[in-house]
Image (cartoon, rainbow, N blue to C red; front, side):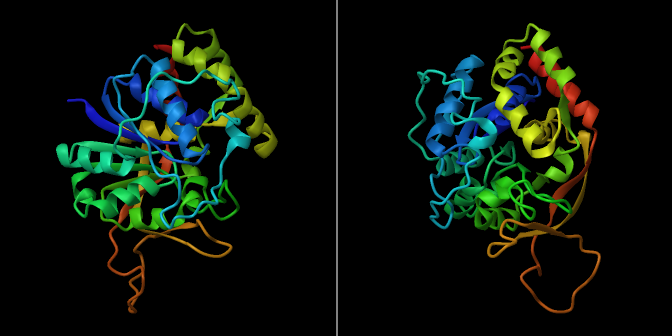
Length: 318
């Protein structure tokens, strides 16, 4: 049976790549997209999600619009338009999509689908975790009903990409992230300690451009802004495959190895957004906010060549 996926997303150039990879993966049945702020504001994320489904010829997939504010009603959002363009898709200024989001909120849609298919749905969370935390608050059974949550988030034992302490998705709503990580759901989080090992080179890009893949051609059009950002920020010629790596890990967990432990998120101060793993190797006598919290899986290594090949093959076969 195909795996049922819901993709919680803030498209975003690498989100677009991850969505296309999922849509072209024979192992996966994408049953919905939910949208969240991050690379762009939520309204534009919804527009981009609908547009990407039209490009892929999959307008049968519902899109549920997510929260416009953080879990604590914060409106000061860290939007990454400097990396993805003002429109989130490389400043191509595509016309508005014909489709509309469904009436349900993202959180309500997540709760409904998890309840409808208990244990069967994989939620791939590619942006800040506000919608997921709202679903947990909306339905106490959500954490058990959802089959698995694969998160792109954290910067375990390396510097962040939003600031030296924090990775962008966790930094986008640290309070929500802490709710999700301590919810008891079956969670695998793929941090930038892993995704920074997965790199799409200029040669890979040229191979995509030379292919007959419709979605590969589309991505080659939008990716210039993202390449420029990487060159300016990291002095590299190529791009990190953050979202596609998390997506491939959801499709084929054999591409990564992981450790397990409690993850908590710093919610205040200069370290706000820092996700920290407690590896359970020391038993602490005192009762603290780490005590009796459920463990999650944290990716530690990745088969980078295999991930790049899987991404390339799916895009070029489109």
